[in-house]
Each structure stands twice: as C-alpha cells, then as structure tokens.
Length: 426
Image (cartoon, rainbow, N blue to C red; front, side, top):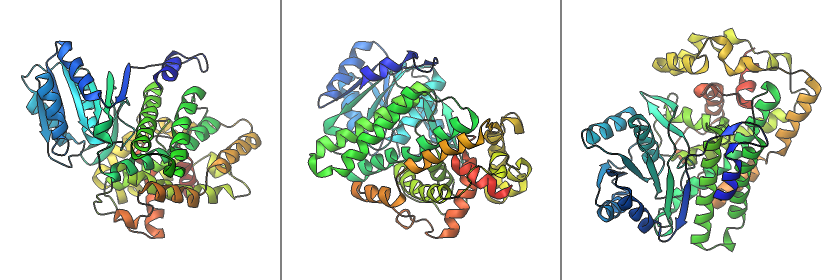
C-alpha cells in the first residue's frame, strides 16, 4: 500500500502539484500493539493515549506497556468543542509531546484536532474498520452545532492490530464498507467540478481513491470467498487507502461529495430528530438518495441549461431562505459558502468554453455510476442500513427533497447535487 502512495507523494509527475505525506508508516498485523508499544517506549516522549469507555481496554494495554497516561472520554462522545475542552483540561500541565488516538472516527477527529492545536504528533490506533478518516489531515467536528472540517495534522504512523479491529462489532465494519461505497458520488462530483469549473483533479489521487472503492466493492460482492479476518482486513485497507488519498490531496475532496453533505446535514438535526446512525451508515443512505437524483438528472435531454450554468446567486444564497432551515447556524453557513463574498462561492466558479463537449463528458460521468438498486444491494450485503427508516429518519419524499435542497450548503464545494438544486431556484 505505502509503496504506491509514496510514488505519488512529493512533486507529482502527473499533475505537477506537490502532494504532502505525513504518515510515513502503516502497519496492519496481529502484533501491531506490541510494535506500537516498542515505538512509544523508544521515543523518549511524554506520551498519552486518548480513548473512550468502549476502547479503554485497548488503551490500557498500550499505556501500561509504554508506561504512559491515558484519558477516557464517555462512550459515544462526538468530536465537538465540548470534547475538545475536556481533552485540553485534562492535558494541561502534563507536558505531553506525543499522542495516540485509540478508537474510531470521533476519537481520531478529537485527537487530531487537539494534536494540531498543541503542535504535537500523534499516532493512529484504529479499533474498528469503521471510517476512512484515520490518516486524513481533516478533523470533522461538530462545532457549536455546525458540522465543519478543520485542517489538522495527519498521524505520523498507523498501527492496526488484527486482533483488535476484527473483534469490533460487525455493525462498525459494515459502516466502514458503506462509507467507502460513498466514493461513487464523491468521485463523480470531483470529476464534474473539473469539467465545469476547471477544479484541479490529480489523476493519480483519483485512481488511488477509485482503487479503494473498487477493491471494497469486489470484497462486498464476493464476501463468501473471504474469512472474517480477510474480509475485515480488506475493508480496513480500503479505508486507510482512502484516508491517504485525502492526505495527498490536502483535503477531503477525493472521498467526500454530496453523499457526505447529506450525512452532515442530518447530523446537524435541523429538520430531523437526533439519530444514532453511524457516520458510514448515514453516508450510505445519503448515497442512495443522491444516486436516484443523479440518474434522473442524466435522463434529461439537455443537462447544461442556462440556469444550470448561471445560477441565480441572490435567490440561492438568500439569507431568509437559508435561515428558515439553518436558524442560528445561518451566519456560519453563509461564511462557509461565501468566505470572501459571492465571488468565492463554488457556484460562481462555472466556466464552460465548449458546452457540447462539457455536457457529453458530464453525461458520461453520470452514466458510469451504478444504479441506486445496485448499490442498495451492496449495502445490504455488507450489513449496513439501506433506508432512511433504518436510521430513524423520516422515510418520505418530502424529507429527501428538503435534505437535498439544503444539504449542499454544508460545504463550499461544487457537487452535481448543488448545481441541480441551484438550477431549480434560478
């Protein structure tokens, strides 16, 4: 894995950009815990392990072996400003110079953000194959109610113990598999942005992310061919590969599109009650909703209408319209989408010289996507929820339409869904 990643890192021969790579070592094996303990003992650092009540049993083994401290967050803790304050308060005055994130997505995001703020390195120790953010440089945080992505420092290394992550509940592995399937629309959105706005897309990173997706999809469709260990290890490999693609890109663009924006929107609980759905589960259901819309859009005789190419920004970014849903978060949403005024909004970046060529290329992107029924079958096979009802969310057309109308503004990122909804208002 790391050989192909390191070939892309640095000055890229394909796109000419410089791709950063902080995570120098990825070790996935049954003796990963012992290897990590040896590294911590030899480092001479003041180390600390961040975990929660569910992963404390693993953190204690590391802490006892390396003679270092560990901090336990309540089970079910999310990466929020409250969690950050708890870690800050505990770490104050301890002189910590290296951290270990022992857990799944929320523990990693909280640790990554604290490590970045404190200017210390951290090591990833995933306890479940549940999300693709272990080695990314982005901390997905719910900050005072708004779902935000903060730039942070990726881990210097990752140690995944086969005996630990394969012992996690099957639901977590299913969530991880569902998260990777979300790359179908994430990659389509990235390619569409390249076609319509000239957004930079490195083919090497694109192909790396697609490899993670293709290998995961194959494993899901051929599940009976693998032992539990082999299957879970393939899911973990796919998640790490996806995270490394984000790290090389410098943001989450290769792995996050409209399907993630639906998940982020639901996590803000603006039009729905709080759900106990995992991140990957919500991404999978968001993917199904978006795929239906994309396939219907692809059936249009004309894709690139004048309104599609020139959205009415006054209507789209109207404060009263957004405030009706985003409420107290509206100022944050406006700042996210227009950090430097209207011209900095992703919707104003469209520039198409050859409309016929752009439409043909966009149609090809949409036609290459699998159908929602095909993906629903894969999500069922991996054991993840495949309907809104299974996430305790309203399972009706009105809820889907309202989610699609406002979810795209969770990020200032060009997606096909954002353009479809912008056209509807223009």
